[in-house]
Figure 1 (cartoon, rainbow, N blue to C red):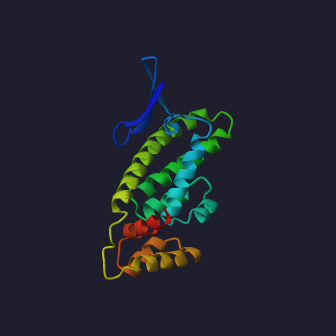
Figure 2: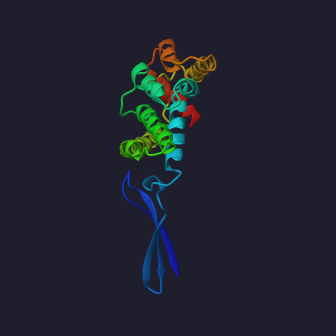
Figure 3: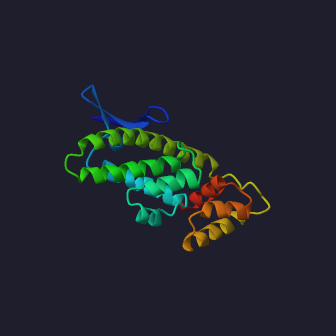
Length: 200
C-alpha cells in the first residue's frame, strides 16, 4: 500500500487529497469541509466566527447585543455608524451574525419554518462570502507580515496606537477605530488592520 498527500484546487477551492494505492488500484480520500455541510453546529460555528471577526475590528459586541439581542443594532452600528461597506469583512460578519441570531430565535418557535427558509438562504450566501473574504485576508496578511510600517522612522507607532485603542475599548468607547484614526492621522480601516494584526 502506498499513500501520498497533495493539495488540489485553486485559492478558494484548495483542499488536501490523499491518494492510496492498493495492489495497483488508486483510491482518493478527502477530508470533509464542514463549511459546505449544514449540520446542527453550523449556525453556532458561523456565529462564533462572526463574533471573533467583529471583536478583532474593535466593535463593542457585548454592549450592542445586550441592547439588541438579535443583532440588528450591531449590524446598524457596523454598516451605518462605522460606515463599513456591506461586502467588507466586518460588514459581512455583522450581517451574518444578525441572520444566525434570527435563525436561532425562529428555530425555537413553533411553526416558524417559512421564516427560517428565507433567512437560511441569505445566511448561506453570507457564509460563503465571509469564507472567501477570510481566505483573501489571510493571504494578504501573510504577504504583508514582514513588511515595515509605512513610516520607517517611527517604529513604535503601531504599539502606541494599539495601547491608545485598547484604552478606548476599556473605557467603553463605541467608536475606538475612528477616534484612534483621528489621533494618529490614519483611516479607520488602517487602524483596524494594525490592531487586528497584533491579535492574530
